[in-house]
Amino acid sequence: MSLDTTTLLAILAMAVVTYITRIAGLFVADRLVLTGRAKAAFDAIPPAVLVSVIAPTALTTGWPEAIAAAITAVAAFRLPLLGTVAVGVACVVVLRNLI
Amino acid sequence: MDQANPLPTYRREMRAGLRDIAPIVVAAIPIGLLFGAVAAAKGMSTLEVMLMSALVFAGGAQFAAIETWIHPAPIATLAFATLLINARHVLMGASLTPKIRMSRVQTFLGFFFLTDEAWALSERRAMERPVTGAYWFVMAVVLWANWTLSSTLGAVLGLFLGDPERIGADFAFTALFIGLVAGFGRSRVTLVTVAVSAGVAALVHLFIGAPWHVASGALAGIAAAYLAAPKEARS
Image (cartoon, rainbow over all chains, first blue to last red; front, side, top):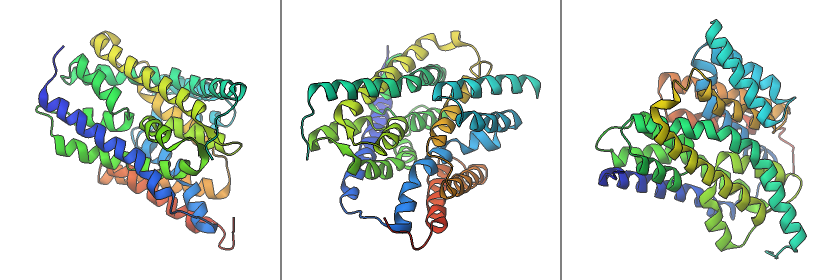
């Protein structure tokens, strides 16, 4: 097993930056008292971030992914999480072979 | 106040954490294997893959890094891309902080394990009760160990895995996130947020490229929620 010095430094830099982003919220939260629209905006952070991460794969990769994502979304309201993942993966495999 | 919980509650919290994280752990295994295999194919050693997963522990940033991996590693570029992709952690941490029941030291240690998944589950749990240290640490450490082990295994197996697209493993991450988003309900504000974030993130990814789509899609969705919420609402 080899460990390149530059690679190690890159990994450490990524780790430090990531840890800073993880704890930075602690210092911001103390000063946030939210009501009304500001609270609605803050409550929207979870779905907004999650959707943004997957949007390129779900919408602009191709028809199999887009259709599978739509079917997965329908399944998501009816099945537990693991069932949802199984439906999504199965759909994309079938659709990639069909389309 | 950070009060120690009586043991039965502590045990119940740990059990709840295990139960909630279990499906995510199963879904994360193919992702970890995939990451390890791709990283190994890009020339990273098994030890380097293991160190990256153990220390960075952020799938999105790690995939982005591997996608653009060259030798020697461009440290500043990788650090900046990591910052952009993980900037969402700041919002997530801020949102979660008032809902957790942990000491300052526990929080500084515990937030090392902050992930989209652990955070989303905690937000959902926080709608009913505060998030305890027992609940958080069980989820966090199990997910961390699983990610580190599966990506290391992926690096070892490498080429034996075959084409990940053939078995749909590359789509597991997307399906998982769709399932998590559904957990936030179907209110009008949520639907507007999801539609705007998805549209903006997809367009930015198409015309500008990764990793800008995450920050811009998230901010657009948040702005949309602000505008879609009733003006007179008070909490």
